[in-house]
Length: 296
Ligand code: HSE
Image 1 (cartoon, rainbow, N blue to C red):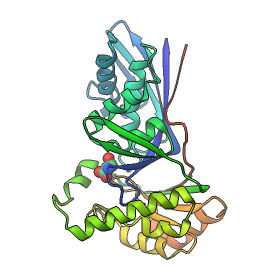
Image 2 (image 1 turned 30 degrees about the vertical axis):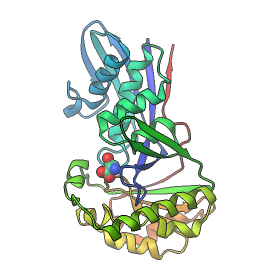
Image 3 (image 1 turned 90 degrees about the vertical axis):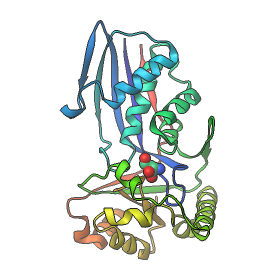
Image 4 (image 1 turned 45 degrees about the vertical axis):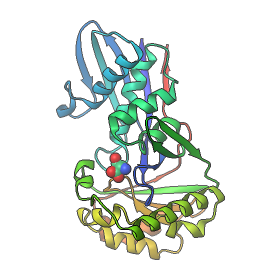
């Protein structure tokens, strides 16, 4: 039996929703799992990841433990378009796929809440894994359990991902954050998050530019990303860009435009000019399904 799991890329934080908010977008990684009599055979990813430390394999082992699957060997065949270490949830695709793959061998591939709990424990925070599991825009609260809610998004938005040629590890991007913040920054973030979520629900586009503003992580991470301040300033001055934010821990920057802004990508590329040299630009939509899993 082969189990095929497809997981969407995700864009976390959306500015003020640090470790809380995230959305799934239409870029995917696909993983095919097959049980073997012995050994580990990982294909389709860079050679440095083809070993026992592989994140998908580690997550599969955790998933197997959780659902009581015993196995002696495993083949994992990976493919897809989600760039590594760019702030688009590539590690979450690996973690979610590994757990779903193991659960599928026990016919439990759709146990989404259980998969969320385990994936959050492995990842450390729920903001990427939740939309990768449920699709759409999610907010999550991590306590003893994880509470995730899908937020209905009213408007027909497009998400223009500006993906730099360089990587930024989440570990490094978290290491520059302060341990404490002052009250005015905390209040601003609570206010902006509330405005952002309410604006997305109501299709109130005028609330988004302010609603995406953040004081918890973006100001500390910007200097790690070449051109960050200039790019954000230009996007904020584009009247047709509804909002922009650092995607996850970066370095990808996300610009939100309306579905009827058909020339948005061309205009953004022209405005940013050489700042986007060698950057990949992807116009994405919300993925509403989360992971899918097929097997016979
Ligand atoms: N919320 C996380 C962060 C997302 O910003 O560090 C990346 O894993």
